[in-house]
Amino acid sequence: MKTNSLVIKTPEGIVFSQALAGPVTRFLAWFIDLLSIAVLVSALETVLGLLGFLSPNLVGAAFTLGYFIISIGYGIFLEWAWRGQTMGKKLLHLRVVDAEGMRLQFDQIVTRNLLRFVDMLPAFYFVGGVSCWLNRKCQRLGDVAANTIVIRTPSIAEPDLDQLLAGKFNSLSQYPHLTARLRQLVSPSEASTALQALIRRDEFEPAARVELFEQLARHFQAKVDFPPEAGDGVADEQYIRNVVDVIYRPSYMGHRP
Amino acid sequence: MIIDLQRFITSERSCWNELDKMLGRLEAEPNARMKLEELQRFHELAQRTAASLAKLTTFSSEPETRRYLESLIARAYGEIHETREKRRRILPLRWFFQTLPQTFRRHIRAFYLSLAITLAGFVFGGFATAFDPDSRHVTMPFGHDQLRPSERVQQEENRAEDRLAGQKTSFSAYLMTHNIQVSIFTFALGMTWGVGTILMLFDNGIGLGAISVDYAADGQTRFLLGWLMPHGVIEIPAILIAGQSGLALALGLIGWGKRAPMGTRLREVSHDVVTLSFGFGILLVWAGFVEAFLSQYHEPIVPYDAKIAFGAIELVLLCLYLAKSGR
Image (cartoon, rainbow over all chains, first blue to last red; front, side, top):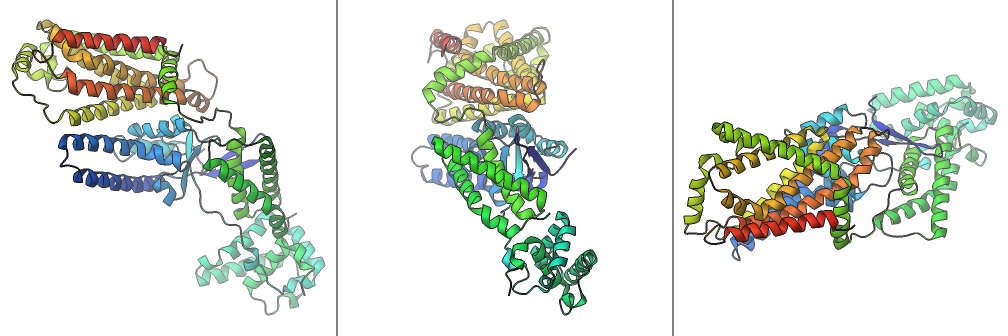
């Protein structure tokens, strides 16, 4: 079955996943790389043009060899130097890694880059794109031969809980037996949904944001019946902050003024 | 139960940061070796981070921290569980005189197969030229079908000016890059279960066979040998090696008689096909140089016997190198 992530299970039983890059993102990265190669070739042409008075024959040979080395060596050199990234992959947060989670080897980089000759057929990476589309791990033929995959590596930030949670006063903290009940009843996925809603609150349209937090507040209110004064004058979004605070920072509840 | 996320992060963060730093150092300096104490610490940190991930996955669905820990574990996993030899420094002479010929011999069956396919093409091309002269328009490359061999020999031997004057170096560079590209293509087509590689080798054989029989039938064997041998004795084996690496790749892909999964089979053959690829690249650089600077010059400028002798010496040296070097 085709999925958008590759799950690896270590011998210790730890499971981790790698988010696979899709064919379109990879095509865009390749396009950026193509532009980078064009810039390098054009720079080479300019430099050699200045040396043309020495010997047109030598300059012609240097350009032929230089063009060949740049076009073949670009991917190999950068993926080796930048641990699986080229300019395009760096900009789009992609990285080539070993398909089984091992260290990426030089041989694998060379193999996947030489196999581009087939993946590019008949034009615009058609063979590679079809292979990527059909393959479970979204591999082009070069990746299959080299046993590599291309993953997405978005910048990962730890959540800033101080910014998100209730702040100094949490109206629910007045009822420790009910907050304990709430923590007991809420599942990890429900807690995560509430936390994610807070983390991404600025991404919503105003109306959608109001509606989402209203629904979430109703959902959590139905879980545990707090006295009416706990929610009096508290907006739905603030109520969810209080709920998340109760769930994720139970140790802080007792120390509040 | 849902864990107290803030307390959990605060208590574990120093461990994650330390692991992150160690991984960064390992990735920045692939040749660095860790001391035993560092290795023990690294292992301990990786295990602790793995435990954090397991705990977080079980008791909280907080995705940001989980992704962060997963990325750390993924990087540490590769460092800890990698069993392939870490290549420290490339020693060019050792690679050339030991690794390359040893690798060639390790896949000698693929080379023989490559040779057999080319010979089959050669025979086919030769028969086609001998029995159907019109086929020359299809089987011969580079416009060789336009002239009879004896006409071309006459033209070449009576040429007053040097047609490559002032462009030998650039012609040589063109030959090198063109032949290397064709060879990489021949190798890469191994991923079509070898079908593409076989077709490329067979096609190459057809062209060679057609030209050889054409020149021999026209009484120009000496010219043919003088023309082709100086560069051909290196160029043709280089293309055969490209075929060999393509067929080795295809055998890894097909996996006849092997129970290992495809990924493992391809992983096993990966280093060897890359070695062979660099090998045919080097041979083709030499062949391109010889073709531009020697092969295109004929009698009376360069005697055919000298060119044939030069080609024969190259061939003997190449055979000795591939058969004996690094034993």
